[in-house]
Length: 300
Image (cartoon, rainbow, N blue to C red; front, side, top):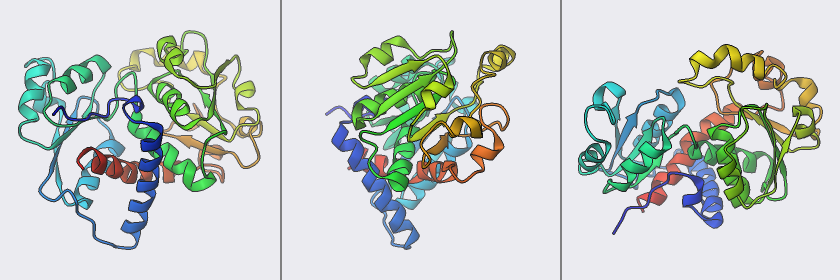
């Protein structure tokens, strides 16, 4: 039987999404109550990194330990993914030695090729096209603070990137409206947008997109691998900073999220990310709990 992978949010159903959120909330409560829970004893997670990350490595590694298993970290120097050995061969070998694999890489096509030749479940820990694990944590955080997101409105401000694409998938599965404000040349992938059966609207300005919303989300203007574009991106996004004035356009009880790392005074003002409407620290912590729920589901 072929293993079940988690490459995008489209690999799960709406009910499974909500179940993962509720399970993550339960696992978080169990951990804080010091209740032992080790269903993955003697199981090993292989962590394949082409892109480095603080939160991704820490949340997956700690999560496996808390579930009774262990994790093996493989850096770009350890694997040379797709450069020294064919991706297909790397997948065949690694999947014979571990029980589940997470991959953090650049091209989504590379991840798909890896998964198609793996004997065990593969998790997308980020590609240039999608970041589904972050959306597990983001939605858990919203549910904890504001309840079910169905029928609510989210404003995405900034680059139409992998996070924006995964927000489209989440809107489709969980039934919320998504307003997107991105400058010309940095709009989301139209194929991803058209594939989402959701209420998604593009706006010319951040102020229009943020009007009356329940959640405001942004991301860095230049991600890893885009350093050469940093100057041009700063010019393009100069009017897209999430400020207190922009947050004032949203509902009074609206919350702010950012997947981190954040650059204060660029994509978000310090007064917002460090202010009362910000839930970014809960959001960051919830990577741990939501991914534990995902690991449980894939290895059940």
